[in-house]
Length: 404
Ligand SMILES: *Cc1c(COP(=O)(O)O)cnc(C)c1O
Image (cartoon, rainbow, N blue to C red):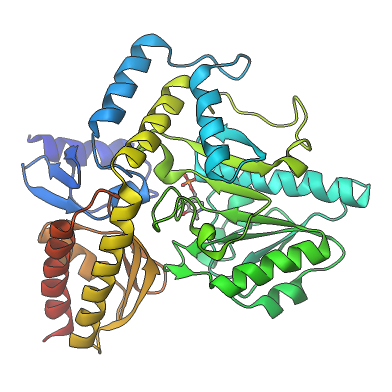
């Protein structure tokens, strides 16, 4: 048996079948490249779903992990540890200062924390538990697979089969401030939106919409909660995507790109509301462990040292131009190009599964998203040559699928 057959057999026999997996097993990654167990190399424009910010096995992150694994891996949150403190200070500064940070292990947990914050806030505001608990979310949003995250995700493919859900979530139309205004009532505690909807198909919130949403929250005395789990950590050319609208949310959820592959989630909460969480009111065993925080610190330091956000701005503009040219060449097949920086959606004229498989066969790994979208989510270190290679493979794939 080859390693590949062995892995496939073990998956079939022992791994829960909740993912539809392609016939491929990766064994090694460096920078923007992956290798499978046949030795074939791929350009990785998935980056573990916007996770591997600085590329696979970035030397700085590798040595931080090696050093901390040998020094101190985990102590729980019954005690302080220095990397957690330093990472909190760094993230607070990146969020504009004047806030506090809570560490967890995933995006869904970050959003759970945002929803729990909204409950505490609503109770304090209305002076009674069980009042002022509603959270307005956007259609086509994605906030994770836990009960809170799933209940905040108004999509049948996520919620179906798991009802009853957590009550209190109200859906409004994304990028439609009137719809959000109508959805807010006396029992509303917060709104929760992604700055750029990721799983929903790479739909950016318009700058005006974000500003009007901030104003609406101020007017109604409700929290503006922003899910930057996918679009944050430099992916759009600024550390947080909402910075481009010049707004300050009341709390921010982060995860994916923060640890370069180490599982970490974080929530930043404005000091005006951070005190709602008292000792014992929330927690996690693993969150903020020294090993993982050291990996995240190394990721953030490497981002600064290598100026990746400038790379995102420059090459993001370049790839948008190239993709729009491709759309002009295949107007019947490529319906729309959306996104900012290195968070790009290519909407095509059919369910994207066949195109994604074709690109993979030709050596380009990309994730799909809702609404017939193929995503480009490369590491932020991707070069112009990487993009040119990706676009040339995409062109072959589009040409084959569109029959031209
Ligand atoms: C991926 C994602 C989540 C869920 O994160 P997990 O780490 O998978 O729990 C939540 N919100 C957004 C916007 C995401 O893209």
